Length: 225
Image (cartoon, rainbow, N blue to C red; front, side):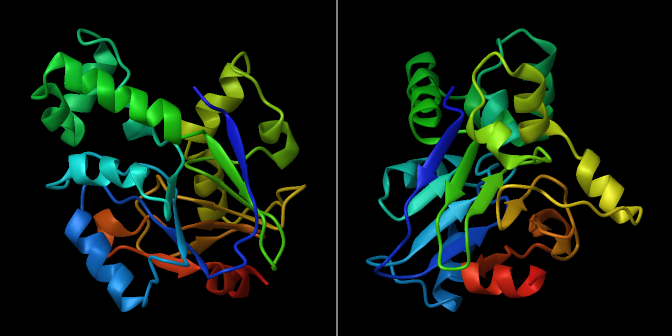
């Protein structure tokens, strides 16, 4: 498992961020068209959960080969690594993952390798607005602790992929600042609209609204500025 990747500034075009895609390949392309996304110059960063539930998880995974597409690991990507007879594999089947179990063993291995190669737990993306952190679920209160994490930091990594704790705290009125980064962007929580903490955004609107949220870095900055 790759933990963290630094992404240099995009001097050619714009950076965009998309909420959980969940196999909705055609909807993604249609939403990118509405954003006038330039496939030659712009970049798209996924907050994870690009697979399961929707009709075309395979096409979404193949996007990882595209030079303009980046994705962190979500809990649905994580479930692809579960032992076949485990409780987590059963949960995966019942959470839109049956397509994966219909793949040949060799194809499953290829897809796992693809995720391992391209999907770290977190990105730090340099931009003219400052450093932008991306992970699927919770962010550590000190972002550098994730930048410097290793595979033995199991509690931290599980929080970053699985936990909804911070989102629930914010929904209850609590606010807190993520140190060491300008702002962070997350998915995972099935929100009806973009939800913010002081310098966090949750953009996972697909399941509640049937619409994908895609924000440019400038739009995201304006939301939390």
